[in-house]
Length: 87
Length: 411
Image 1 (spheres, chains in turn yellow, cyan):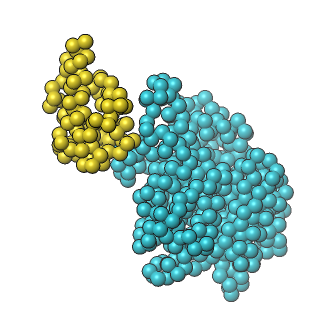
Image 2 (cartoon, one colour; image 1 turned 135 degrees about the vertical axis):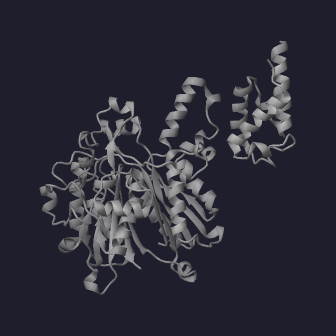
Image 3 (cartoon, one colour; image 1 turned 45 degrees about the vertical axis):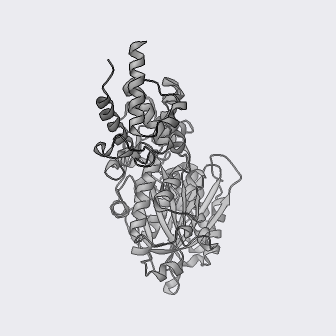
């Protein structure tokens, strides 16, 4: 059962908080992972690895350059979950 | 030296460690983990401290335990020095370890075997690299003069302090954070030393297991921890009116060129390091009032060191008070030189040598050298018959044949 956009957003905010120390309440959809949330390339690997496990989707390395903001990740996860269900 | 920091099996800081040393308390205890049941050695000297109150959890899991210990001790030393206002380009770091992130390497290997490379943390390499501890400290303090990591087994942190001293003398830095950290109380660490027959098997008497210079010694006890010093040029310290604990007066290096894991039984290599440290510090043997010995509690090592001290000091050997603080801390491997330097500096400052515990029957080979070693704290004399500054030295020797002696002088 795919999660709603809000569910993914809340859950992903928790991951960002866990790996960056940034309060989940401060993680806005439009927040830039690098500029606003101080996610460096290694922390990005940590967060994406955890997100893959949490949401049950694959996020290939080649997609990472397109995932600039929190909303980018949320939208990608939502699409990926739906494609799994419809497959 | 304007700052000291330590996290040891005896205390969470320098004051706690020093008080326990003077009280003659052992930091050795039984290992309670199930893995220890399979090993011949089931004792060690652990640091019992919750790091999560000092470092955020998200950062802790990106750091090896040795790096965590290093950062905590370095912060203490930095605070003790009054957080010197120094230009980043003039602040250096020289922090050593004997084995690096052994725990992290083993954990990562388990993950690799179980889940493949994708399951590795992206911090795997930074956690296992031996210079990781230096890097964490250097980044936190913004040190840009240079970042260095000596690796010379159990002489590592003594060598790091020596290098720190040279960084300042050479003019490359005004302030250097120097020391070492180690955390290898693991099945591989214990098993590896046990199979060399280097560790004490006195499992039923943990507190009596580390007994340097005693006839009944049967090997060292593995310890963990970190020791850090803030070294500062005399002019920089004077300009800011800093309190100076002691002067890092000299360093002496030598190598045995004898055996990978045994010292020369005649002590010639270690004696050379002591002599070179005194020459480098431009002090007379008569000025030396105290020796913090490497003395790990092994048969060959302790006897060889007693001979080395005798060779270096000759007839003045009887004027020295020798302390073997590993009798209480256990052997902190690559961190031992830094922690023992701190003990030697405190001894010099307070004119009080810490005791050597468990010395019930001194080895004949030690007694014959005329070393004076006591089971109680012992007052130190003024040195040089009161005319010249008193000096304390700290010896550190490492597998491979590394010998390093540091000389500290009253400020």
